[in-house]
Image (cartoon, rainbow, N blue to C red; front, side, top):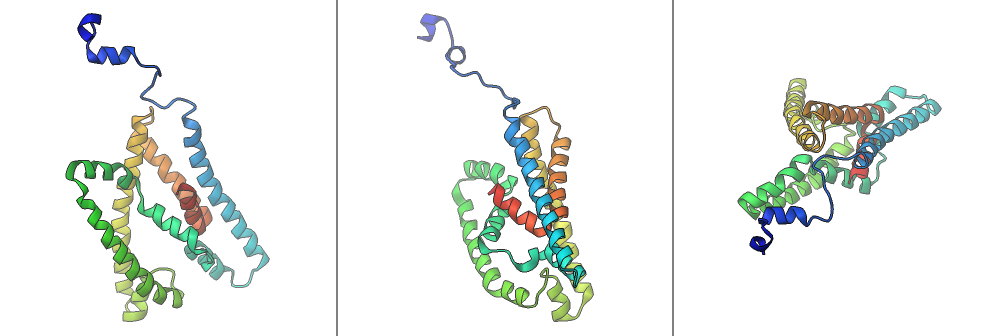
Length: 219
């Protein structure tokens, strides 16, 4: 057939295309992308405004309430949004972009890591979290100060966590920025800055509640 029509396979496929496609995002494609960033920031702004309104109604122990709302969501969050938030937090861009490549290149051995996730989640949920929750701690590192009476150990553990997560967040931010830059004319640096600024805004304004509900929206 290709000899009779004097076309090779590639040329034949190009000629028979019924739908014209482009490698870059068109203006209609940018609408859901823009809505994603706008809604994420709007959730943080709304929850931050709601929190300020509630604080003005009850000015007793204002500093303690502010800290509790920002760092622990006021300890009033339900189980289902928290579970969705944890699930969305575990599904980063590295997982979405890297896992298919891992499976394609090295096979399905990665499935075995899911068993470790299950057992670690059970240990954290049934052993560590009840202790931290009953002690009314905002993070696990405060337990080191109470248990070992050592501020140095608490600071060392929290600093190690911050350094590790700063490196991790750089990789996680770079992955979607790289994907977005390949589909548009936006540079990788600008896409990474847009993602980082959006996340910082809704976290700073709305606190942990905003983080949880934005994760629910993304999930």
